Image (tube, rainbow, N blue to C red):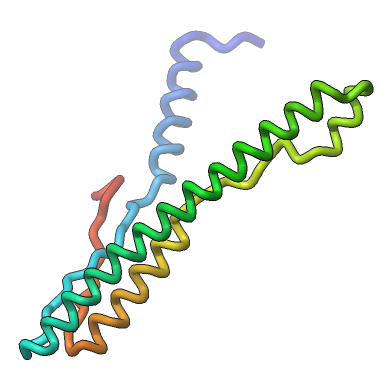
Length: 135
């Protein structure tokens, strides 16, 4: 049984509408940092920002070091593959390396900054913002 063209278009249209309706709004949590009221507290909060920047820098260094190690592993595995007489021996090697991400590290930096900021007498107001598929 053949479907005529207009019926097929209607079916596709309904499927597209159904797929789009399944997409809910995407929200992101943002923070508003309220500085401490005292000079000492504000100095302390500035130290928190300095440490945050240092922490981010360490995360980026760790990621670069990880990528270098992964590059060396891939290079070594390539050399081993080229020198292996039986190509099936290479299947045991780990050619799928783990990814080097600094996401978790930077999240810890932000958590430490939040803790530091509040310990200095500052406050943090969190709020949600719709970033995609907003109504």
